[in-house]
Image 1: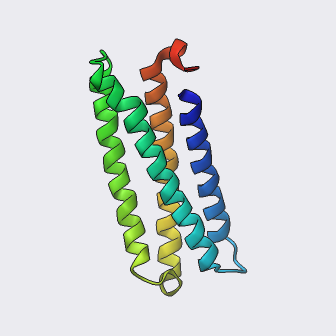
Image 2: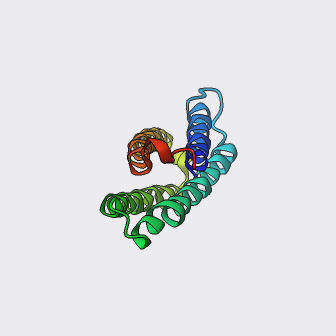
Image 3: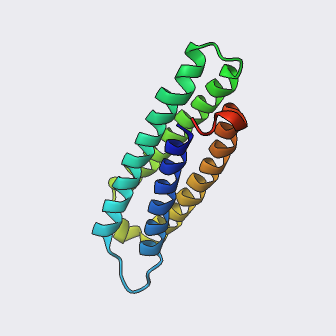
Length: 137
């Protein structure tokens, strides 16, 4: 289970890197490629969120695990972050990023940094939930 968690995190990091490469290329504003990567990122973040909830947080709560309160707090944070990402996606799906390129690039780079930070926080939290002996499960 921990391996699946870290695999999803790796996929997300790779998509952020691809997005940043496209955003920072001064010779091209390939909105089609950016759109594809952004939607792939959205799908992967949703897959990641559902995985954490169905395989980690909810089972801990159902088992009344002593770490359930921590898992519940992490789940709430996960949901809040998902809502923030959805707002970002909706904002930039409703307008043409090409017409507001500088603002779009800044917002996208900021969201990438926020996602990286969230991943780091969640890695530390999930590692603590599993404990050293459970990570291989």
